[in-house]
Image (cartoon, rainbow, N blue to C red):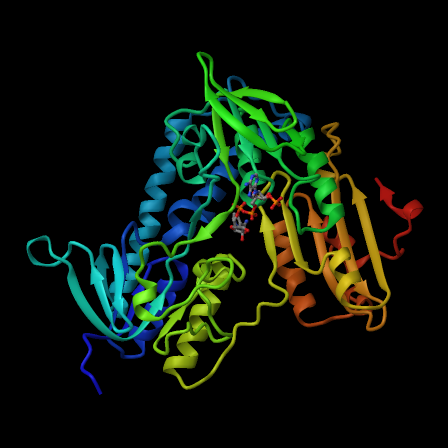
Length: 466
Ligand code: NDP
């Protein structure tokens, strides 16, 4: 057998790459990991974690409104963006440091620099060798975990004036007005963040309603709720130009609409980070959507190279990348072939109010299960808002396959929906029936008790609005 520098070389120190590197090194193998930016990847550095801090900072304004309903008063409550940014960045640095320390404790060699494949067993770390030459490293196996990055329409005139989520984490000051283009996770999450922080926020989406792919009741309910929180939602609108004017940025749309704003943020999707990786020289092929083609064990078209996480564009979520990395490790290094099961993965949209979803939408259930579907749906005012005069409503929906009586989809829009859906996901993954949900005694008074007390199948007249 050839003598390689390492047993495993991982490209990309995000959630998936770090997990695979640590497990494999802890198992006694010689492992290196290369990272061109900061250790932690999208999730820790420019995604889930800083986004959640921003959501939490933004939600305080709503909490203050509720508090006033309960008799509290706040003189001079104000928010200071630079203070928040500084605190957030200290915390992100701390978390990144923990990742670095954990790699070190596991015995992984951390290499700072951009890694490029030269062939199936050789990696060059650009400019990191002697006298600025490339450093060449060989490995028996390679794992690509380079994640994704924001995609924007490069041919849109004026796109250079737009930012993406990456810059939104570091705006030098909060704008007075922001326009967010897109109707997916990132668009609705950042619209909520900026609106909560007092920025005049407009969400512009090309389709008929936000969050395409989610259950239709969730989509319409959330669109209504975010409008109640002051976000202007403009649908059926596609950008044609962005122009800098003396007073801001003028956005023009295909239907003739014009909207002026101070900051334009594009949240129009993310693309696998494969450019310039040298995949062709190693025999690693892409699929039709430009992601690395992998089999169910995350193996690429090259025999000794695997890929996990967003670069494979399966389900682009941190916990999925981690599970794919664990399955890779078990399969390759522990003689325990494992495929990560991508079915029934719960997810949350940290909009305000947030969304929690697991399983099938009503539409998907009707399309794929080929039989009768029962739907249970409730809309009600959460108890917390009773003193506030708030018009906000929670939505809870169960989708049940009538033949087996299994709950195949759970959809929640409302406070703490992400926390609730994590637990509901256990029941959906376990294939429990509606009768088993109902046999579970309620916890009172909570919002979640509605999930085990929904009795009436939905007919248009039976939808309760509390
Ligand atoms: P999404 O794929 O969720 O949404 C992209 C949005 O951009 C869609 O509304 C899409 O419209 C729109 N769009 C695409 N192309 C264009 C275009 N040319 N012009 C105008 N609009 C366009 O991507 P995000 O960037 O929001 O998020 C990327 C992924 O990251 C998510 O899918 C998710 O997997 C992950 N993520 C998860 C989060 C979480 O778990 N909370 C948070 C953030 C991201 P259309 O629907 O019509 O195609």
